[in-house]
Image (cartoon, rainbow, N blue to C red; front, side, top):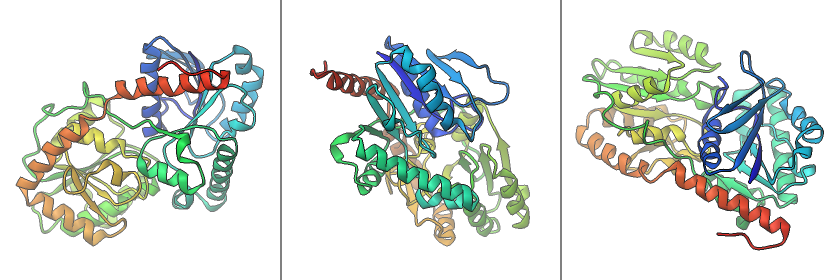
Length: 378
């Protein structure tokens, strides 16, 4: 198959997140199965215009905020002439409205819809633009009956609530590379150490964790928090930590390498994810694969990735008192930590990128053959 993908960012973009990991892990394996994969995405400072990354030909053009217009332009001036078998629209934030002009068989990847949560993240004019564009993009997708790959039951339910028929959706779960994410890389901290891992965006609500941590600092001697990752909300979070008087007990690592990230995930006693909404929670499964349980907010995506009482704990989103209570209980119950850790490892072992990549090739081939009017090979 000759596959073309549209996504706002690629795996090397500093602004990339779980959606880019998901795309890269799956389609680098699809390329490894002998298929030709091209990704068209936005450019960023210092990046070459074209390069091949793990078998994926990456073509970069345009800036971060107007890339959607580049997609429309380049489809007609370049990609339509290159005769692709199938096109993938990895919908993330502002849609490309590909069902209105792409003639090839088309598949969408949906992680989650921002919906009203975008108003937590962006200024009102920009948030309104994203909100309305997203709603229109989903409506177009539903109208043209484009098949979807979704990453979790929560995302599937969300799309069904927008009128997308269940029979148009297949799962393409977030998984983990077990060669990299594994236990035994570093010993657990001898003193209580908890962590957050992910992008530092406002809607991720890491300030809730800082507030909960401040409530516990005096009650748990030696308690420390490490915030692993980077993002535009980092300066605000550092100020909040200072205002709460906990800056000496909180470490902001900024961007870290993959090996350093895995080392931290091994060392922390457990991870906390306070996000207001996720598609799935890739950071949860990566933590689990390192033998680390997760406390997370009971929101779409995280409630799929965390098995309550088995691989971690859930608390009502925004309830600082409940969050601090869960952290306190888990720190003081070594037996529960050990049980959750063991079950987290077993849970994470079920998620394998190779299996998902093979399923995705079946989905794509089936859509191609359906457009040609003949049954797909299984």
